[in-house]
Amino acid sequence: MDKIALFEAVLEARPVPRVPSAFWFHFDSAYEGGQPMTERHLAYYREADPDILKVMNDSGYPPIGEFTVREPADWRRLKPTPLEARRFQSHLEGLAGIVYAVGEQVPIITTVFCPFREAVRVLWASDQVRYPDEHSARMGLLAQLRSDPEPVLEGMQVIAGDIARFNLACIQEAGCHGVYFSAKGGERQDMTDAEHAAWVRPFDLAVLERLAPASRYVVGHYCGRGLNLARFAGYPVHLANWATQSENPSLAEGRAMLGGVSVLGGLDERGPLVYGPRAALYAQIQGALENAGREGFMLGAGCTVPGDIDVSNLVYARQVMTQLTARESF
Image 1 (tube, one colour):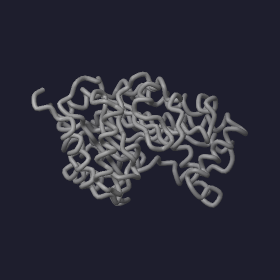
Image 2 (cartoon, one colour):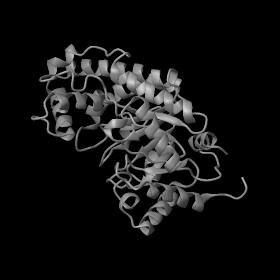
Image 3 (tube, one colour):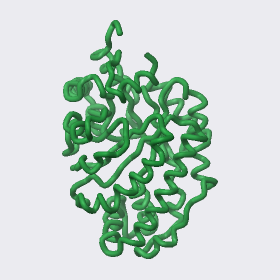
Image 4 (cartoon, one colour):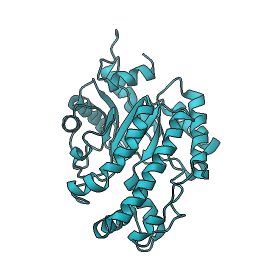
């Protein structure tokens, strides 16, 4: 069974000859787009041999650093970004090169950041003195939404349209197989369920409902600690991923909360996978398998692993899972 057939079996929770695995991390800024992006992803693919290839989206949303927001009313000035924008085109060029090289060998999914996250990034870049880090910018955006939601939501609607249009081009023009949708807003400490339902979920669904019909595969990543995964129930994804070690539900618990969807994860992205020892990593792999079962499960980390990770650790994790689950006859 090749990697594409294996991945599709996982999505459909069918029996598999082995449980697959995949990991990813951000590359240096020199590889954000174009030919360097292509070459760096292909080098990683050859080294780590993942069962899916998640393409990092480090080119960035064009208005970040270009559009300034000081107060809620400023969001009304945000206009749609044309597909011809340099950052969009740089990513499309790099992605097309990856698909051309290995698109018949492995599922290729491009990273999509949700509208709420991109709005946070726009605000953060607007005033890094007031917002020295992403968390403070997230709190700043929530403060704007709580004080004067209408113009902020108008801006987020523009962002959602840009994200959908750009990622449709990633699928239809660059040729990737699907998307990895990174969703924010699940952390209980940041916002209430009602706030998520009003300010985050509608824009996530607006993007996903445009991308899902064009995608062979949609992976949902639910980012953060202390998540209420139920906020993401009903998202049109084939596979769900979250960090199980960060005050979050286990794979089995989360699968039940999300309607029985296939799951990806199980390993701590800041734990033995990165720092060892390998005996602890082996035990964590065993624990993930015992919790999730072998059908409808793909081994991975709860989030992006550090960029300076020893790739041999990722290879080892894949080898261990193969040894634990390989069937001689299938």
